[in-house]
Image: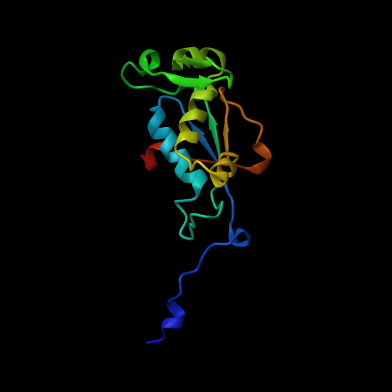
Length: 151
């Protein structure tokens, strides 16, 4: 048997083909939405996935203000932030964050599911979140992604 033909092919940046997807967050639970968006942005759905290469697709999330949080998470969950100064730690609930910037809750959820390194910061650039139903990426001809098929 010729074992040379069975070598594993590692993905390179030159062989990566990036697509654009649009995901509607209306009524979808935050964690389920974030896990699907993170998986697509990371590229884990592709057959040539490589953990050290940015081979993920671009994901546009619209209607982030209509995302659902189960249970009492809207008022009980706490996001911890720090200003960088002594005593500068403060807490915000999802309700307080969504009042000012609704897309921030989805961004934090997706960012928490990506690697915490240079690659993770690069992968997060594949994700764009908009509070309303419109976005500015029509020129890229994004495909509509049915989120329920991935959950």
